[in-house]
Length: 396
Image 1 (cartoon, rainbow, N blue to C red):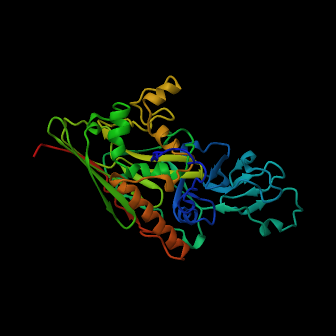
Image 2: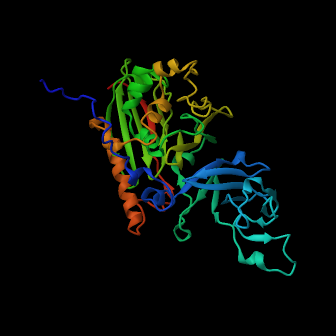
Image 3: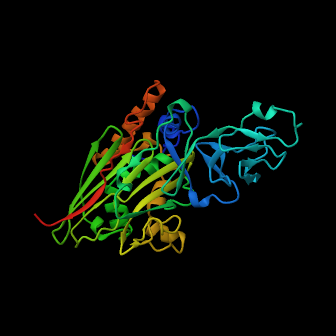
């Protein structure tokens, strides 16, 4: 009998597991500890109202709030008295008061009032609600969830310091309000420039710009804390399209505008800094701070900020049916369909995937450094110099 090569028969008998080292993010896991060494985006500043906001980040249930003095706090969701959820608490000038017995906690978890205890009691000085430090920048709220003694300063990002722009913060809902997959398979998408030629052009039509419809030459470069790609293509009019994107440790990235017009010569720096933040190992949320160019006193729009949930950008018409998404899939369909956690052992990475290979290697090296009691590569930088840009150059 002739041997059949590549038959699917028996493939489910022994399916390898996911790469737990790179994909798991709970406390004590290698990458979970790496992520906790960095400031993580958790909410828009504009989302903090007169009510606490419950959030889940890296398997931890928390509440974020702004007290009536304007200070932002992040506390463990469950009150250290009897465990009632602080999402039902009352925001006051000095902090957040539990709905059950009225214990009042400030933004650093200090208990400053216990109305049911005797006035002579000092018990409030003996308890503390678990808390995390916060930082606000560019319209986002960030939290530091790592060891107190290793807390880094919040860095400056070069492309967000440029003049002539307005910073605009928003949730990145392009994979859904909550993406139903592991954080890594979304994050590493940004160092896979070839997918824009196939997914966003040849397969699904022009989802960003016709400039992506030309097969590019690509290259990759590692820095101490990032992987950069270069994408070069000669457009039908002879102009040369040069593009650089960059993915940083552990989970933020920068890309230039996705909609350059190939008939205009341009030189524009990167457009945004974006974070993909694990909710748990199979759910992810995204945030952007975008530097919108200001012309005649008005900021340009954003194809990401204005996109409907689940669509790659605002240029993509909403699907009318499941069949529509089959005919015109975008980033959401491609990445969430890799399984809730992509199984790296089943992949067959090729030459064009070198950016993925390099970033996973960099991520593993950084997590191993933390495991060994060392700082990850590039940790603690006061300023992050971002190389991402678009150039449309004239013909040679």
